[in-house]
Image (cartoon, rainbow, N blue to C red; front, top):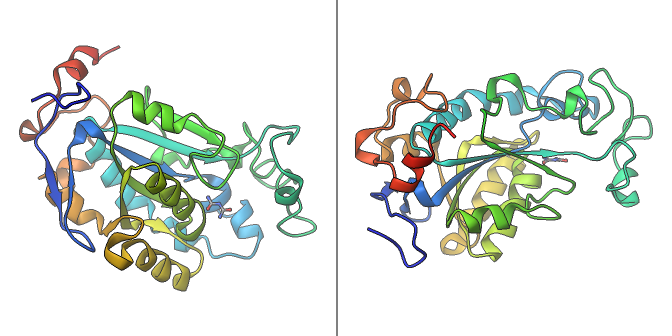
Length: 262
Ligand code: C5J
């Protein structure tokens, strides 16, 4: 079946979510992985330097690896974002550059290079979630993934209408991106165990705020519910890399099959 926009429709998967089930078709859905960068997740990075317990964010890595493998197996568009700035910081507003701590701010030297500066070790995505060839890596200067980036153009050109949103931190870059996406008409499913915060109360309230009032910004579900809807179990998902087998029931749109191997 072809949609009004001319994109092939795949069978819909129905995810058990709050406030009510979320329907998605892999061909019109993108997995968005927000800022899973060493500076936020690893000892010696910006987050730990500011006094945060990075283990609270590291919990997200294992379930997110399974979701990433499932998205690749389903041929979803995968987008990895990185928060950061040019080395001369000409794209960093002075108000943002002034935040943090006197001795540790964006651009300060640290054990993982200059904090949140593109090309530095700390700016990179953690090895466990390394982008595969052909996946979008989107550098963003702000908290939201739509601000001052071409994300909306990429999504509209691919006929994407739904986003599965994951990454860190729940109340900052994840929330900002979900709000931006919602205002642009994208339907967002946030995976509760694939987003993380340094503050347990912000994690709880941040997720509650998304699904409240009948889904004011979107839907929330555990990753297990997504894997169930895609009819993948953990063993199917783990280890399926880009180019891996596609579950038969999901099919592959003709135009995507033709492009595989490009
Ligand atoms: C923050 C982010 N917390 N990725 N960035 O500064 O949430």
